Amino acid sequence: MTANAPAQYSGRRSTVAALRLSLLGFMADPQWLIPSMIAPVIFGLVSFELFQGSGPYFLIYAILGAGMMSMWGQTLYGSGWATGQDREFGTLEPTIQAPSPYVYVVLGRVLWNVVSGLLGGLIVLGVVIAAAGYPPAIPNPVGFAVLFVFVMLTLAAVGVVFAAFYVYTRYAGFIQNIGEFAFYVGTGCMFPVVLLPFWTNPIALIFPPTWALDALRYLAIPGYQGFSWGFGWDLLGAVGTTAVYLAIAGTVFHRVERHVLEVGNLSDY
Amino acid sequence: MAGVTVPRISFWRTFWSNAVFAPRTSLGFMRVDFVLGTIFVIPLTQMVFFAFVVKLAMTGSVAYTALGNAVATVTYSSVFSVCQTTDSEKQQGTMEHLLVSPANRFALYIGRGLLPILISLATVSVGLVYAALLFGVPIAASAIPSLAVSVVLTAFAMVGFGLLLGGVALYLRTSIILGNIFLFVGLLLSGVNFPTSALPAPLRYAGDALPLTWGLAAIRASVANGPISSVGLLWVAVGLSAAISFGAAIGLWKVFERRALTTGSIARF
Image (cartoon, rainbow over all chains, first blue to last red; front, top):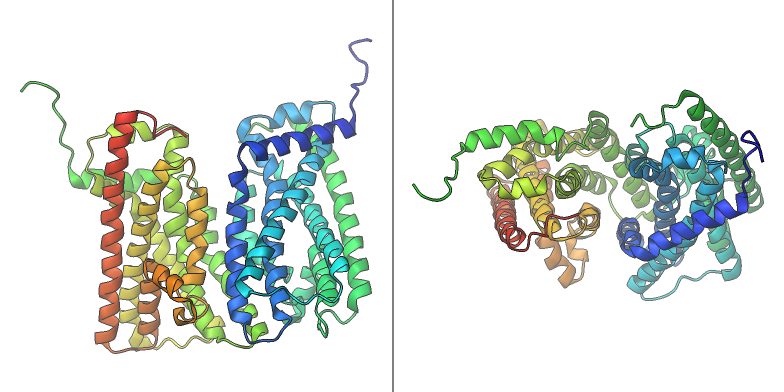
């Protein structure tokens, strides 16, 4: 093998290694699941209190909203913040200059965050049901569970795009903290987006979770009034926007990687 | 004189140097953009979020919720940020130096709390402006002097509470969990979104232990242009909770300082 031979890598191996490392990190210090669950549990309980007396299906709003917040915490924060952590630990440069594209490493982390997000969402769901004292009446539980997981994947798609941009910026934490409520409002995690002023709807529809959550409510809440196009188009929109996000993430990661290797300013922190 | 001579450092010098240096050291994470986001963005998005939840539920008052959240956002700068200073000290390796310093602790903590108090005042003030202009909360001009007193007392009490939590965090591995709990728990227990009378008795008592509950009650009474006798009583309650928080914070820090000096391990991160 000559010195100039192209470096060999296995994307699958990189992803599995990143997934394994994320899992080990979690096992070493599982308390980090708690911070991202405190706000959703409290918001779920507050919403449950506010929705009391509003009708039998409002418990689903509280559960969905709180579950979505928990998933946001685990999936989006986790995925986005992974790059920030690399930067803090000083592992960003070695990871990026490794032959394996960075996107495979991020993918492994995102996969773990999806799993832990699901775990967090289930815990939040349990707390809100315990507070209510009865489980929500869901007409199609299997479809609900499948779509619930899909909502998480749409969040993960947003997380991957964020992670790509966070390579460039040291403001990851700032954007996530300050933008947290804006994201909750914009994606309608606790109420239908159609309640917001009409001019905000096109902005909300840029985000895949907006479509997926609307579809989930159509499935779970009889008589739900969301976007006028209904469940089918919501689902299609969610799949379409998620695919676009993943394509953007792939392109951005490729360009970001090339750019930071060219300019060599990654360590300017 | 035999033995070690402990240098005397003036109270005001300690106060002022901490007020000036804290934003660059232990509060270094509070950059200008972060502070502006905390003052202008978070109150607006949090108020919009809960206003739409109430609108969907059709059971509560948007004005009540908006006013509650306008005040509740004070926890970001007063509780969460102040609580995190302990982590900052540990991470930066300055905790040991602080613990062996002969500086007057009261001056030190008040000095460090100066910037959070100012940011808290600004956050609540901006939140109240949003509440009046965007959510129809009626604030009469005649209510402003009483409101100003309530806001200032609340900001002091909340920063005192943040320092108290920072003291507890000294004993913990990280303050993040504690900070997250008290960042949001007021939304449930302090009458932010619904009256505390709707809570079960144990939760109501827990809410009474939070300065935010009394501060918010004082601010609501001021906005309602209540008689000075009733507002005054609430001021006493807020002042008392501030005094207890600052006193307990200093007491707690003394206890943990002693333990730190004895065991030599408490300041580790």
